Image (cartoon, rainbow, N blue to C red; front, side, top):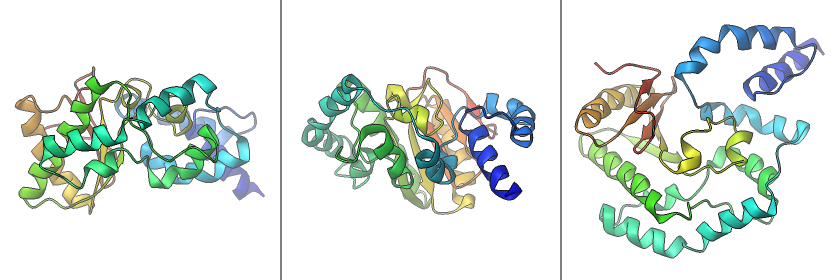
Amino acid sequence: MKFRMNIICLGLSFGSLLLSGCGDATQMRSQSSTQQLTKPDVEDFEMFDEGLVSAFGCQKATSAQISVVNQGNIKKADFLQKCARATGGSAWCSQLIRPNPSSVSTFRCTYGATQVHQLIHPNEATWKNAFGAVSLIQELEQKGFRVCQIYNWWRPQPYNQNVGGAAGRHPFGTSVDVRFCSNSDANRAFDELCKSRRQGKIRAIGHYGTSALHFGIGDATGNTWGRTCP
């Protein structure tokens, strides 16, 4: 029972919820506060969070929020066509519009069981950020880096809140999260992206301490976290 409570408390701590009696989780949250200042997104925690969503509930999207999502979804064909033109027909375009497969239950809890598992920012001015991320992926692949998955682009509220994401990046369609095929590929790709940052191709780069990197193509805050550029 104690082990189960610790698991619950840990999940709630990372999910930015408070539960009285979770002393260990609260202490852990305090100890990690410095790290959270430099790591403003916690997408890689989503897989752990899956079971907690159904157990403790989540913020449900309003009809107005669902309407905004649907306004983007009706532009699917146009988005894919423009992405193909911008990237030479890259297969990565289709992954841009699919939310993280590891967080399907969070998506369903947010938007309901009948909502199509798809997110396209309705503001077409944001699309260049997604296309720019694909172009960078292609450059990295040409240099021998192995990329396995795009798992986040636009994450509107409240879905972004339910997966523990920072408020200032993905909800604006400025960022794409990319999972490499190994931690080694991610480490080397981070250094390569630092060169792209100096060339003005990307504003922010985040390293999640795993095989995943944050491509902040148009992020308002142009910084790095998780690692520093050489």
